[in-house]
Image (cartoon, rainbow over all chains, first blue to last red):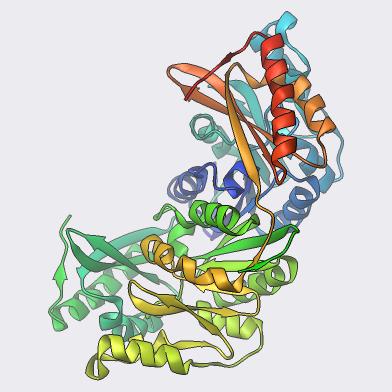
Length: 252
Length: 252
């Protein structure tokens, strides 16, 4: 992985009617976001979930690949009629949708010549010029074309492939975070929190998230920054706020 | 709820750094999608997850409210500095961001005059002309402006409020679905499945989703349509496919 000392961002495009209908609970967003940040220092700036509809995928790939450093797609790269990710991305980039020789060989070896039917062959069709993302669990590779990385929708298979994306990514600055869990309500601290946020406007993001735990309500204060020094400083300010208001901290 | 015998669609805009960073696993997408379809016959056509950044929220509200019949937002309507949904929506629609009299009264009653501080008052500020979505669990109301419905991010509170949206929605045709779980692999049935899909191109959507269960791999075939008659017909075709290939069905 190449290294670059600046902010690098990505977007995720989840492709699949089953996620949109609520039938399937998505698990790839949280996994990809955490992996991209912790392993590569890449921040996910936007996620979209779209149906298996060609013109919608084409439009979103065009928009997102223009706007973000990287785009990760999940879903729609299997053998059935509703798997149209590779074809749609080819259209978006105006390149041919054709057999990738190495992918074809990998799949033919995996299934054996006699069982390598049309559905299975379809998984070797990709945008012309794609690089492969190898798949150690079920052979069918993902692909990279321009700044778009296409992965499968089944979480366990996606997870098994993700490390094979690393060498193609430019590394950015990792965002570190600290969490403080307070037994109070948001509106008790919102004013002071706003003042602290202003002080660190350019270097730290403060998030405030209510929780219910041990039968009590509370607030998690999450500070996020590429600088651990700034994080230490802001956490001192937060401790002062907590002490001055006599708020109990939840120890985990 | 008014009734209309045509397709009605919606989009969901999830607002919050905590979802994008992977810190919090979203639960609202699946709940809202299911509720909108089963209760109102409204299909969710797109979901976006964006950070707590004003210009990004403004741009997405503009685009999505133009494209879809309804837009549901979650998150960013609390008392802290990172809660900027109401302000951003006001900007998107070029209306004033001001105190909503009834919301102000509800919150003042709930907290009591002496404890009604600035953070709490902020929750009564909304786009001018908003209708309220009452909140039976923690008082702070959501709001409706044009075709945008703004709800909180905490799933339990959102769930408690959702029925109060119903009367403002035009009801569409409900999408029914049937699932058939087969002990086979996708590539064994993909060709025939494609032919069946073509036959019912305009009336039924077929989705195909691999699963791992009871130590075996399989495929869930999900058929979705507004017509139960067409669903029965297509399921006969699917049963014929299953029989001709000698595939075992998983009974649940």
